[in-house]
Image (cartoon, rainbow, N blue to C red):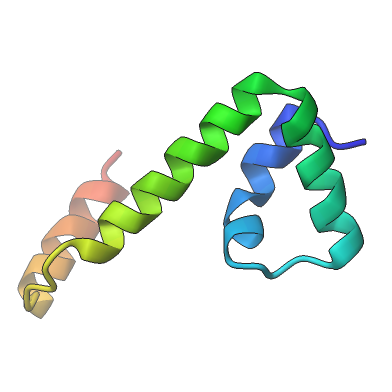
Length: 74
């Protein structure tokens, strides 16, 4: 049986339908029994949908490099 940590780790694969049928069924059974994971999956699905609706603005290489430097300095 899947644990809550497994649900979090595999949520992208679940939403993208990139897991086997048996794994998907295990995921759904866990969601049926776990209110917290149902809520997480619902919120994750909404976040993905909202992200897809964001306008696609052109990004310069300088902006990408600046973000990379900030992340690397963390």
